[in-house]
Amino acid sequence: MVRRMNREPSRAGDVARPNLIERMLHRSLRWLFPLVGLGSLVWFLVRVIPKPSRAAYPCQRVAFPLASGFVLWLLGLAGSVAAFRKARRCFTGARLIAGMVCLAFGVALLWLLVAPADEPVVAGGFPIPNVPFGTARGVQPGRVVWIHEPNATEWEGYNSSQRWYDKACTDAAVVDKMLSRAIRGLAGESTDAAAWDRLLRHFNSSRGKGDVGYTPGEKIAIKINNTLCYNANTSTFEQTASNKNRIDNSPAMIAALLRQLVHVVGAAEEDITIGDPGRVMPNLIYDRVAPEFPNVRYLSNVGGPGRPEAEFSNVPFFWSTPDADGTKQDFLPKSFAQADYFINFPILKSHGTGGITVCGKNHYGSLIRNPNGTLRGKTYDYYDMHDSLAGNAPAVGQYRCLVDLMGHAELGGKTLLYLVDGLFAGKNWSSNPKKWNIPPFYGDWPSSIFASQDPVAIDCVCFDFLWLQWHDHAGISGTDDYLLEAALADDPPSGTFYDPESDGVPLASLGVYEHWNDPWHKQYTRNLGTGDGIELTRPVKADFDGDSNVRFADLATLSGQWLRVSPTLSTDLSAPGGDGVVSLCDFAAFARYWTPRPPLPSEPNDSVPDPNDAS
Image (cartoon, rainbow, N blue to C red; front, side, top):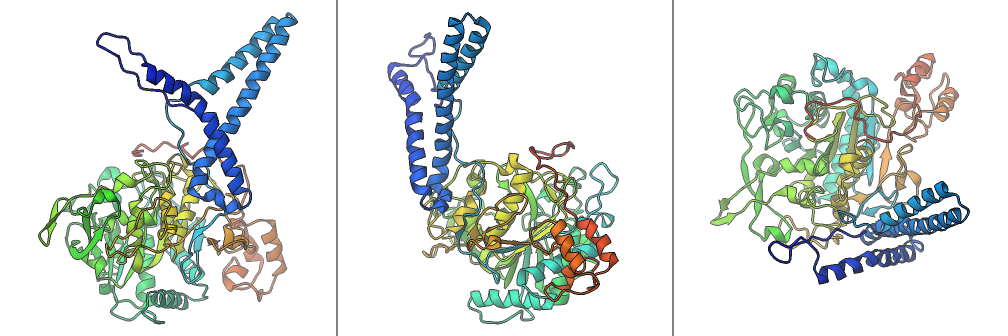
């Protein structure tokens, strides 16, 4: 494909036309595409056939669309030749109408082959399945736990009189159980206390603190996503009316996490800080959560009753891009810098410029920005983090500021847990919640929680879900490039020297990058036993074979457990009714989890218009 050349008049009053050099270049570019395409095809086959994992290498991800385009071009060329020959035979036989049809078809194919394109081909496309990169992290390396419980949400939608965050729209007891199952599934333990202890001990050991759990007095910081409070009233802390049905973190999810930290881990309320340093802590969260946990520090960019203001610390943050040239620097909030543990707690949403906005991009609010500020006698300029998002810097192999954020020692370096709130999920950063039509949701709210100790793995899993549901946003070329850069941070495709502390020590791999095998089974290499990539586990009651679907094989297993408790399955899985003994009640409960299998959607679910969707 050839981009249309710009044309300028040679002198005043002339009709715009290409000059001689431009005409020669234009003609040469017409024949450059098949040569480059042929070379790309040969290169792709030579490199990938002996070792299929090379298909995910950045050079092959660029070569593949060129190679596939060349194959289509070749097929089109053969089709046009065949059409012209057929037209000639028809004219010879006096079949004028058939001849004209064949001739028109051949001309159309030829025009498609030689006509210049308005835009260049952009690298990207469908995610390549089951080719992991990087080093898996966590007590269960690369594990991402997905909990889906349809009974967690009951909201009728934004046209109803209720708000999505109202108590009646979320079953708090169900959310508590979902989070409990997520923590236990992540650690591989049967109780919440044992699970937290194992997560903490592994995390502290990996940081050189020894085989120790939580020590009373240690501070915990939780970064939530309150991005839609950007225009909330800073005096009343009330969200604007137009934004009240747009999703930030669910109050029910926040309360569930605080219950775990206070009642299970044993943290004192005053040692826990939760908030988004760049946004107001709104009443819709504070009024729901503070009565139960009055001494927790509810961080806000503007201080008020029960809501301390975010303050600068002296802990600097440097950007690794040459564009920052050492003068564009930011600082961590004091509460984040002083924390012993960090919990990254975003929402499941796609993003109009970033493609997706989950754990990596949740860190956009983890700094206090310092435009044109001065520290220790040196002036620092402002670095615009949006410049490196996929929408502004598409394709692959580029500097991504998200890697610096994910890898800084005082942010990603001390993150104990990555937790994604997917109860109500959105299409764009500013959208209302929308029901999902991909399996296993089928026109319902996602009603999900994702948990991991691997920041790359959990964002890869969320990308796969968001790409399937909202591929017009998540499908932006280069959306997952920051994940490949993070997985290979010690030797990234972009060649960037990622060093957010500016201490001369590059980041190591931040986690493992991979995409699932297909939307039905949602399996990664650790699920398949074929590699050391991601393991997506879904401890669903009645999903006995672990394939993320509840179907006839699971019904057979349940029937085999009739009136007994299986010694090979946990109590939570052996009885959907929850009492540990399989009975008729469990068959009734089993039906709630049954997974239908209609065709996958061909387009995102946009059937219900969203009047407040800024995308």
